[in-house]
Length: 165
Image (cartoon, rainbow, N blue to C red):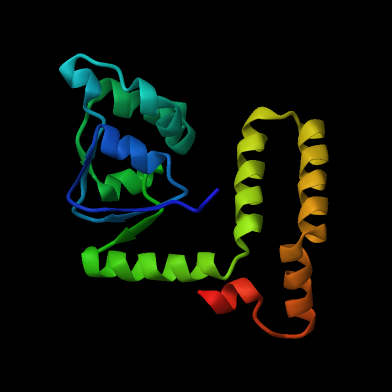
């Protein structure tokens, strides 16, 4: 249920790149080298394949997986592997801190429910998704977190979870 952010630098190869694909947000330094090298050594990128395909789409996944081509994070951004491209680790750490601050402004349970919503969108049909989204929203509005969020908005103050971070 937590927001998962990867900051990749150096080499993001094979399972390491696959793990990054399973994250919510990926930051990459321009000189990071990337590849899915499994097929080059006679194995299948099976465990991480789903996450790679979801992140980059089937066409790009085919190329990346079937060629074991090595590329930089600059190209990785074009494939959809990298969300934020930075010059170096210092810039990467600054971007990471910015993202963490943004996430901490959000209600933890609301983020967890939003991740459920994102996952459900891959599995449910349009009508089922509308129903499920409505249920999640109703639960959130009635929760302690939802009541605190609305109260903080009306009172023009930070919600309690944002004050704690």
